[in-house]
Image 1 (cartoon, rainbow, N blue to C red):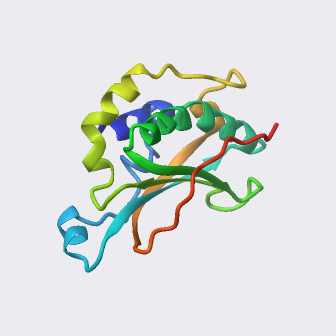
Image 2: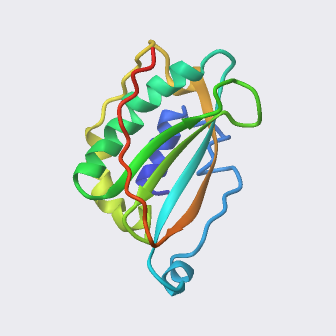
Image 3: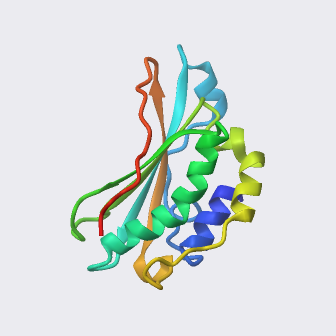
Length: 161
């Protein structure tokens, strides 16, 4: 199991529903990605389901923990960007997506060894005195490709309450 998968498992409280470990994923072998015409980079979409009434708290938790590590990864040139997207409600099969864009078609596999010290140094933060298990769960992670020409964007801190 990769380090990013381990940290997502830990942040989710080890739930069997953790998308990276148990749910179906749409993965593409690195060899297939490399053989594609033109340059591409991996974007991972991690689908989250907040517990009822906990979407804002889940966002604060993700920003304080996942994005704290992701920002270090961006500063070190491991990621291009990270982003929080949500449905604005607790309805539906999922209600938030964490999107991470990598520099190339290798995705997490290409930065895995450099991710380990980032993950190891991080101490969980509980902005509302609640852990991931209390707030929701990871349902699934999908790996997709962004092809040239790439857009340039950078996540900005949320000012939501």
